[in-house]
Every structure is written in C-alpha cells, then in structure tokens.
Length: 414
Figure (spheres, rainbow, N blue to C red):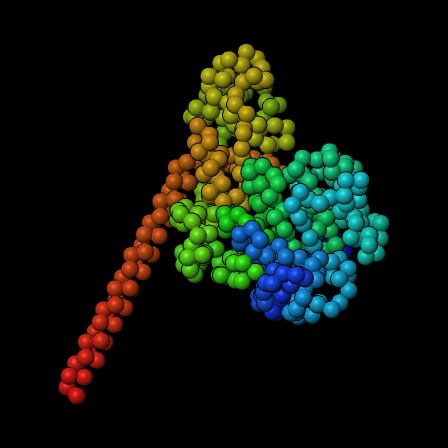
C-alpha cells in the first residue's frame, strides 16, 4: 500500500494551565495557558518578542519541559511520557531549516524514519515522496549537502524532514524568517498547498501579523507570558479586534490586510498567448502578430515563465531570442494571496503577473484590473459593514434612551 494511502491526518491538541517558570525569575515565562486546537487546523501564535510564544510551542513537544499543566494530543496526556518518543511523533521545523550540514538531503529526511525502525526500501521511497511533495526533484537534490542549496531549498528540505515520519502534528518556529521576501511568499504558498493535501495539525510561530493572516485558520494573539489577548479567525480579528493591544497588531489598513484572506485561485485567471524556447522564430513572430496583444510570454523547456516578449523586442531579435525580451522577475501560485499578487503587479510596469503551478509551470495571468476590482469589492463590503454596525449602534442607543425615559415616567407616576 502506498504511503499516501495510510497518511496520518491531524490530531487535536489541548493545553491545560501550561506554565513555565525559570529559576531566579520572579514571573513565569509562560503563565497558565489554556487552549484547544482542532485536528487538521493551522493555528498561528503571534505576539511581541519575548512574549513566550516560542516557549509555549516548544513545550508541546517538550523541547522545553513544562513547570506545570498538561498537554494532550488526541486526548492522550503526553506530559509524562518519554519526551524523545514524543518528539518522534511530532514534526518540528525551525528558522534556517536546522539541517545537519554533514548529512545529505536524503540522510536528513531519513533521520526520524530510521530511528523508529522503518525498512531501507520504505525510507528510500519516503525520501523521494517527500522531496516531490515540497517541489524538489529527488534525482537532483537527494545527494546534495545543505551548503549546496539555496535558503528556500533548505527550508523546503526542513519541512520534508519534519513530515517524513508522517506525524499528525507539525510545529513550526518562525521557519521562513531567514529568507528573502519573495522566497518567503513562495514558501508560505507551498505550506498552504501542503496543508490542503495533508490536513496536519500545524502550530506556527511568527512575529509577522501579515504572515499570520495569510496562513492561519485561527490566530492566537499573545501578550506577555503568553496570555491570550484574542484567539479567533483572521477575519474576525481584522474586523473586530478584542482590545487596543490587538488593534495595535492589526495596525492601519485592515481592509487592505484582508487581501491576505483571498487567494489568487478565487479570482479570474486569464489565459495569455505563449510560445516556447523551442518554437521557430517565425512561429513566434506569427503568434505575436495574430494574438491581438502587444506581447507574448516565452516559456522555457519545462513550461515555466521565462521572458515577456514585445513587438519591439522581436524586431531587435535578429534571429535569436538570447537578448530579446524581459526576464520574468516574479510569479505567484494559485495559493498566493491577492496581496502577494498586487505587490508583484505593482512592481511590474506592465501591470500583470504570471500564475504558476507546483512545479513552476505556467497556468495563466492575473492583471491589475482584476486585482483592483477585488480591492474595491473588499472596501465596499467594509463600508457597508461599518454602516450596518453604526445603524445597529444607533438603534441600541435609541432603545436605551426609550427605556430610560419609560423608567423615568414610571417613577414620576409613583
């Protein structure tokens, strides 16, 4: 039976009065946290530096031992079991991947399955499956060492290693914090895609509220000592922050932040005339002439966006595409947010961005008009919601005034 047929889905997590005290400190680092996380849910801990969010995360797999309280995973109290066995059942991914530099990619991914006694053939198949899952070619990458990978590739391997033994729970401690913004966006999209396929229970720590909105099914906004200021859906927190502390995290422009709640797959992706690097130059000329547009998209041998070619570029090509056109600087996936797409479009003077699949293959294009229509719809929805809230407030005040007047009238009669 293939691994995917027996894949473990997520497990529920319950934290009951979870506390951590360090010797010599007058206040606990984490103070009596109570939380229920549903199976298959992606929950994000977000809060200021030093608030205890990473400490809380590490207590779930007991990398940090709790001083008090209980941890239950799928109803089983794991507070007193062997912490090493627990860690083998809980995936863990950290910033800068945490890969062992003296081990190959395959050896890093195989680490936990080897510890728990999987056969060599099963481990070999699993390594290939995991690399495919995170969008890396097994033949190309499994024999490499971490130093031979880019930062984004290292993070992908780190996630593959964390998922290798098929744990129901995955803990992620600022895993994308050390990569550049474009790579970070793509890694976030990859995690969203993986979660759609795997349905693990993921607890994710970040200090970036925009990342929390983009990834989380629910967000726990934490104060000092991991006190929960608000634990709710991203939309609820954006539209109805619990207090001034949460409002400070939301910041200005809540309507625009809601662009992180809508995905590229939810809007119109248009087709675009394309050619490949293997097409004869005359065919490319003909396609551009017949397309009715001023440009076409050149795809590489794997069907990935490579260059934008305009009519003037073709006139200067002189029998070669080597110097013609403009390299595609950015793409988005269908799991990217509208905010990601809008940022990509705004940095491109032609006002469009190519949409790609899991292997980077071309799918379509999203343009400025589509994105701006979505922004206007969100702003209009916010305006109507604000008007309704104001109307309800006025009605409540009128009822309160009426009740007070009735009460005053009754007192006078008495």
